[in-house]
Image (cartoon, rainbow, N blue to C red; front, side, top):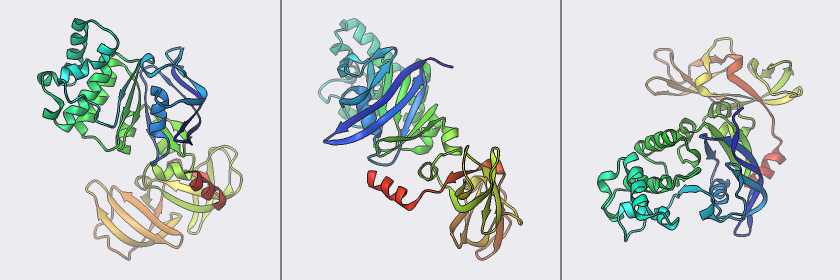
Length: 357
């Protein structure tokens, strides 16, 4: 198992009189990339603030490369930060902006210039070294902020977005992290980009960690209704678990018995069957049947929306029947390993969760 490089152990933090991070624990190996995901005010920016040292840690500890940095000043942590805000200094050239952190660390002028030029070259900005920020595009300024962060040769990189970035920025971020073997914690606004860039995902809600794992694990096996719905379109059907046992359980739905993966120790009773639309297939004898409400041709897939008594069901089919129109009744199923079971959340639990958010 890879050795832990970054560890947060039961960390809590406060901002403006409110607790914004609660009992947060996770660890990363050297060179791993973590994407923080969650709705607005879920604590993503607060986690970056705690790591950078701009927010005070109320409880727990943060360890980076074997050092406890919980109480260290931001400048002593060895962390590079690319903030969501444009923090370039308008009165100095691009190369002086990139060298600013090196200057604050007291490096000789020649060494500062060498490292700044190296960082600019890595991001394709060497031709703009003498320009001022006002003469750069928004994309170039964003990359310049990344160059400034990597120029100090940080042990950890923090990246924050408040709006989705162009593909060019994302590609350079990914290649830079890989080339430098940098450990990184990222707040990305595009969820698909986060799943593509990250080695691990931490899903937050109201300052609490809801799920942690690889992008595939979190997407394909969410452990809660919140996780299932937040990460993408998902069909959730209320049923009754009648045949638990092993890794696959049988659930009685209104249209028949459905089979799905189940977590350990899930007792018989009300459950939710969850399946992503792209995992659904046509099946005349399947457990879901209903009239077509909408047909959307998407090129490689055809999205079929069906109205059921319990709600809307969506299938994304690679091979839809020709001439499919509204009102046609279809049956649907899926492979047991492509669906999973969730314990039904009680209304009071959902209400309490909403109040915490």
